[in-house]
Length: 326
Image (cartoon, rainbow, N blue to C red; front, side, top):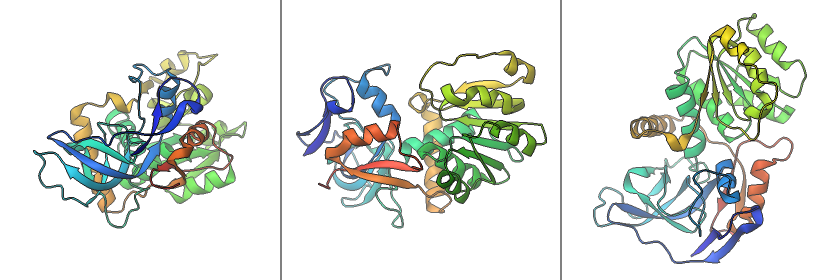
């Protein structure tokens, strides 16, 4: 099979298309023909060698994928060959034409969804973890998604809307991005490239600030979030790509607010079970609708890695790879 393989840490060019053995499922695993796999920032960090712990080389990236069941281990029951599935974990890397996954991480993909939409785990599970398990969102609260036009941002807006009873604010940096965020469920949107957008958010909340903020790029916007957060509010840091100068903890102290880290790969087994259950229910009920921005063939995985970190102006939604396309 074809796979995108990392044999040394470095820039996107270290991703090389190779022919490797098709993995064999263990007794409690499923072999899936991968028809689409998500590209996420975390895979670029691992590829570059800055992620802790670093993957063991050679390494095939990829976690959230969708495809068709090709085979099952001897202990697997109830997973028909040929069934459409989405994956919440893999045993072998998913930047490949085939991958194995533990049977508990193989879930039915609704017929009305595309395989590209099935690459939902990292974005939607991260958003759910932030909103429910860490943010502990409650009806009547105001939620701000800071950087809402990306994959996790749109997932956060959609999930927040699906809960009902929330006021949802979102930021983006282009008119297209703002429109997409509004279309996906935000009540009000703000352009975070405007110098006074934080003042506008405070004005909208009549000076109270917001209850929960989801931070996608904390090194750029955390200081703004600290000025926007309300009393006893929670800032959930989902993404960060650098250090922050001028951080003054007194802003948090004065509001009795908290800053919480969100790391999907630190999810507890209990949280994962509940998250998978909730996402499957919301998929079947059409309460969430994954947005795909662009699909690349596996041979252009390096280009996808460049774009996920430096997206073109106006880009929104998820990037995916299609392993069977040339």
